[in-house]
Structures are given as structure tokens and as C-alpha cells.
Image 1: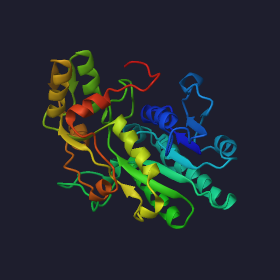
Image 2: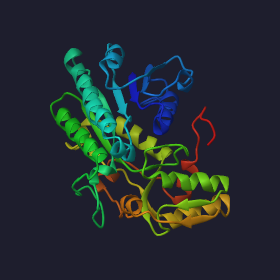
Image 3: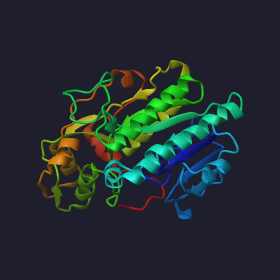
Image 4: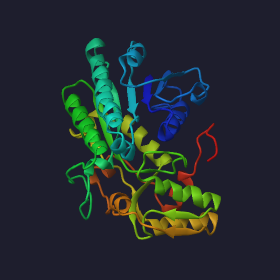
Length: 325
């Protein structure tokens, strides 16, 4: 099986690559070649494994894609994007990667069905809860209508619609997951408005004081990197015949206040100083998230971390070869 991962050098991408090499798609060893694309990937970042082909470049560029896709691929995990806050600050970069690059990739993958009869590509798309927009209703479920209010959310919604339509037409076999902020990202991650969620973990881990840009009562959707990868792999493994036509799921999350997470971190690491200095735009976007219960996602087998203490353990887990943070 030939598998392609875009954004393979990123926070989630590295963990997904590690799991694919260890576990395969259906069983260990069934991935014969793992093709990795990341704009900033260096040779030292690629796993030392004969099955890996790693390329530094733009996933939407024909010069990058055509050689890699000369042979058919079976599964694609599309993770690469310019994150929301950065896309708002740099709209041209956001449009180039999150919209035009995405469409170029999907178009090239769709050609495979015509070029290689019976080789429709399975695409797992990392969409975002940003498609839901703001303000959110009092609760979110599978019937909540998207109304994106930032470019990042709009681009992700376009991706969902294109994939659902091209799946209907038999050009692709797609599955889109509306992911929340994933913890705990490295401290230097940029462009993520939800960065405070990961910073809480990192500062508690080091026992350092932290000034939090949302209140203790702020509520957010929490998912660890390990759980995120679990859900991405589950999406790829689901039989196509059992899937609904929209091909979009919002996986379950832990709905927790910042204060609850701080208490769990103190149980794990001991006391650390925290001040709350709420910044209204950040609190509004990331600190007023309501309960989320997508029945369709639960029935499809997607899962959250299980408990707040399990979240803490999984969020701080390092991938093999990853530098300490």
C-alpha cells in the first residue's frame, strides 16, 4: 500500500507517520511506501526507514506532485495548512495553501481514478471546527450548520464540500474530520489562536508561571495528539459502503474549563503559578465553546481521550525521535 501524508513534518504529521510505520493501515507492514511532503521538512526530520520517501516542497505544486504521483497512491492524509490566526494575518499565504493548493492537490488525486481504473484514492482531510464559525449555539451536534467567520474556516468548508461532491461522483473516496485545537503543541508553534491551550501544559510541565489569555471559567474542546491520530487512522480504515453521503464528522472531545485542566495539571506536576488576563477576542473564539455531541461521529466509532487525566498523559507523549520540549 502506498500512502501520502502532507504536512508530515508538523506536530500531528510526525505522530501519524510514526504510527503508520509501526502499525500500518490495516496491519503492521502493509504500508510499502510512505510518501511525506512538508514545505519545511529537512532530511533529518524524515524517519530513517527504507519505506519513506520525503520531499520538501509545496504539496499543491505540479513540480512536486507529478513525480510523486506517477505511481498510484492508495491513501492520502491531507494535514498541511496555514493555521487560522496566521491565515488572517497573511491572507495571501492562507489563500495559496488552504484554498488553491488544496484544490490543486484534490484535482490531481482525482485524476488517478481515470488514469488507473479501480484505483480511487482514499483521502482523509483534516478539516476544522472553524467551519462552525462564531458565536456558537448553546450546543453543537451533527445538525449544527456551518457558518465560517474567518478565512481558514471558509477554506476548510470548501474542502469538505468538494470532497463530498467528488466522492459522490466516484472521483475520490473522502472522509473529513472537523478537528479542534490539538494539545500539547511545541511552545514555539505559531499561527494558532488556541496556543494557550498547549502553553498551559508546557508551563505546568516545567513548573513556570503563566499568564493565561482566557479566564479560569473559559470552556474549550480538548483533544490530545494521540487521540487525534487515533481518529485520523480510524477515518482511513472505515469501509466506504458504511459512510454517509456528507463524509464529514466532528469527533468527540472533552469539554472542559481551563480551571479544570489547570487542576489536573497540578495533580500531575504540582503547583505552578497562573494569572488570568482574558483577551476578549481569544476568549470569545476559544473560551466559550459549548458542549459538543455529534451522534453520527460517536456511532461511526470516533472517540475522545476518555478522561481529563488521560488527556494530560496523552498530550505530553513524545513521538519516537522527537526532541524534548
